Length: 285
Image (cartoon, rainbow, N blue to C red; front, side, top):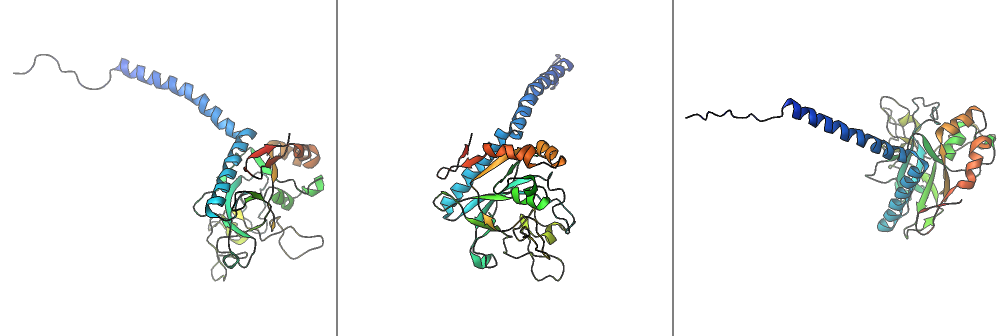
């Protein structure tokens, strides 16, 4: 015989649903400011310093575990589609940290100081509002007023030895095939499918773009030098210190044609140094 009592169906009543929605709304309301605060912390100079510290610690650990030179490369993304002007949009381009490792000369086109991206580790993007810069050798507006000079200043490496000690080591980054200015065009003899470091011909080649950052085969031209592309990217010693800058302030200084005198010159006294033994960042202030 059927039970005379009405069987309650599963589910929520309108009142219960209203309470659930209201509760979720309150939780979201409390969580959003916390998430926003967390994101803002990474957009700050302190957040960037923490990111760099973590990357340097990882590079140092990899150097000791793999018994080879390993470092962190700082470089702007090449966003240009024009092979004749690969530094187009450089100032506003995002900057990345790339883990690099020394490779034997026979795999790097004969380079004694050849480095390539570490296998399996994606480049780490820095916050879009902040960047890092090497101010070595810069002391006036004239030394940082054109794209190749800015490219040179925002591209540098910090390297650790197999013992985990910070060292000054000459660095010349290339694609993992070690090819000099490869070109993936049909019929070309030298090609590279490296997704991180590659040539102007391969990166500034939509829709077949291959690579993110230009390799070190485009040094700044010497005085009176002609006939070669100079984009501020050549072999140079690794660094032991750098500064953190705010993009909006740097952009304003460039618009006034005074990047050094109006802004960067004041940052030099607050440079961050890398501890030779621990790899941690130390403020000069």
